[in-house]
Length: 189
Image (cartoon, rainbow, N blue to C red; front, side, top):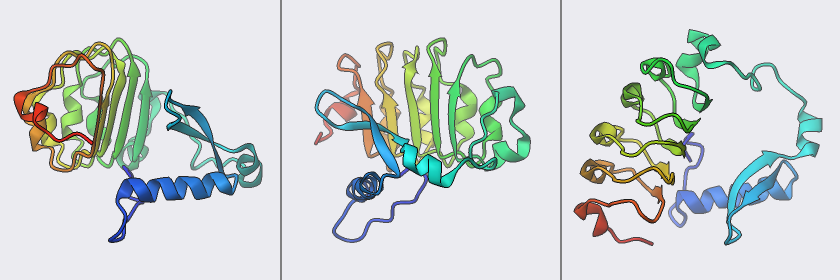
């Protein structure tokens, strides 16, 4: 969904289309379920061993870089970034102009780096493995944001500006997060 690959037709929403495509990929042994939650919902997939054997490995698609070694040309066109480690330069994310999905995996991160504000194409933000206590007010400037996974135990409060995220479809939180009045009134399905 974050990459824009799902184009729902009139009868289906993006979530239904995504589930349908996931089922097709699992059925054809291209991916397999890696992790489920307590309710049996799929949390993550991995590439199936059979698919890896058939497709092989490509130097163009399987590159893993240390964050300080990502070439600027690659950073400009990168669509998904799973960042693990310490954020030394708070302006580092401004190089990722085309980023659609960002996952921060670092419990030392206590606040969202301000350079994320420049990621105008961002659709999926995962801060569930950080020490972030508050989301900044400027998060509402990320107009294309569809999913926020902020299910970290450290998060205490959401900004009232979250109501301006008109594309927001999924918000994952822990149970004890303080919600602004505008959001407490949302209809939750």
